[in-house]
Length: 331
Image 1: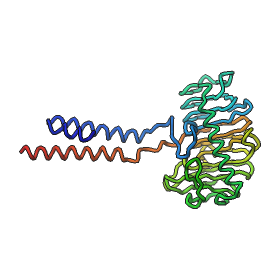
Image 2: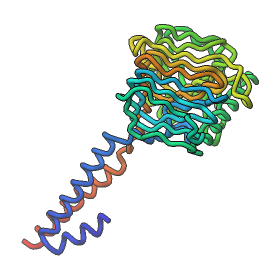
Image 3: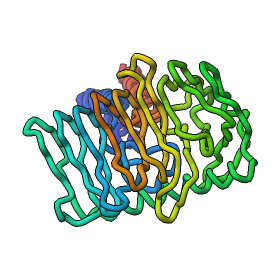
Image 4: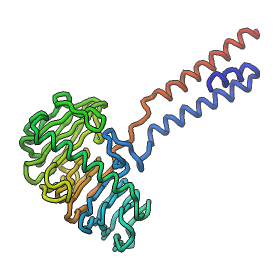
């Protein structure tokens, strides 16, 4: 493309101007795209089998209900099996609510001020496949924990975990650093995960009782929320029952931001007065509480590394150089 532009410019002075203007426009568009990205469909570093299209995924076993009250969701919501959802509002969902079940009264909207930009859809097969995929991911990680082959670590209070210290397993074709927590406390504390942008980290929290994220999670070194997964494994993976619960409440972000992929397929989930950057999947055969001013934001789409913009910039310089050479030969 750039050679064609350059060749065209040798024919007439106006050609240079047009080529340069075109490349400058492409460079600017590239910069703009890298800044605004795409918030609706953010493709995760972890293979999530369709789960990357969702901020919340609820098991919905037994026709139980996702309770939505006074919240913000910047992403899609998925409700699997025969699950239901009730939006008591006021809430803003910058995405859609997708049900795997047909419309048999699955959704109740009880507040006229509710905003659901992507609408409500039923019989969405992708919800079921995504839920099954992440459930299997949880089971694979839990099997590592029960075999005591992950790197053992006590997580208590403010501390840093280096991704490189975790034992490496190939999971769904990806190399993952796996840690098996022997204890866990995140109350008014900040857990830091240090790792490169190419690292994937899974922290198994099964067998430790009910898990509470009442502090913050932060990252250094380039690793992001879609690269870190917290797995509360255990219970019955056939009936999606019998596991410990997951509770996320960081006092509206005052105690820190919960960042990462939070996975508890077989336990009840409550996200209350919390700020989350990442995804929350699971909820077993209980109601899923997403309430009280909570906000969940999908991780930022990984931007262009700069290669495209750099090539366009080189092309701009090349065309301008040829312009000077052509003028010199004419003179």
